[in-house]
Image 1: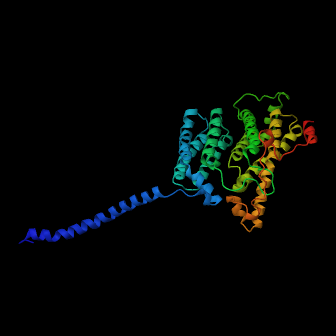
Image 2 (image 1 turned 90 degrees about the horizontal axis):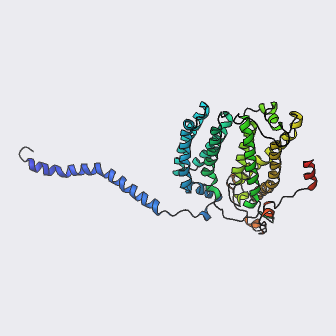
Length: 382
């Protein structure tokens, strides 16, 4: 080395180059693999939705529409800054909204990364946001209105809107002459649930102290007497507000899914039935007990109870179709549990039994499958 430094340098150069190559090669390979992976993902074809089973197909619909998850993020930011801007007057409700807003943004981000559970987690956060003003007795009408509206929008954008896509397969249940899940069939429930929500929310505003009185066109102060009775005060939250929240659930479940949801979303039809039928009967019984327990009548309560009875009547056929589908699937050897949560097609031997006749347009189509007895209507009026 001392006698020939130049030669020594030339001798060591290949070794130094090999060391440099060893250091640089992993980075170069990783970069090349990343580029190759991105190219493969770009060229990967979208899944053929017709070849997917119903469960994965619906999950794909929820995750594929990125715009809905992007739209949810501003709602999360809105919740974070709402307590300061709207002066909630309730620290518990303020913290609830700020934490919920952060969770909404986080779950929306995870939804963009195609984690199947994230949109459903966001929907649950939205339902919590809509319920929080009742639990914390929102002291201001702005807080109540804000959380109700934003909570509904979060749930709608997270799962309701992505699941509006039509699913493949037959529409009419086996042996039926009409489809009980069409939009025409669900329209009465949507309209009546919306009207009932506004009436109940008005009464809840009185119970929460947002308005000084509750209007009653026929029974004078009857509505106020019912809303301030010992029965109403026995609830830990505003019972009228709880009714309004129930109507929100009815509305969201009524607009969810396509015209085949009696077999593609049995769990949703079951939840819809639980919200409508048992709660509808309970609401009617409570209204009937008003003159006995309270000694007064409430006009708005009577109207919402009437709407609820109509919703029960027009919703039962879809529940029956869903139960029939589960029974047919069980007899065909399928797992009832799996069918309930993921839905599916009809077994081939019974797939084409249902007639293809569609309900008539207009009011007749909305009430197809429901009948009303004049004796029942007369007794209800009396």
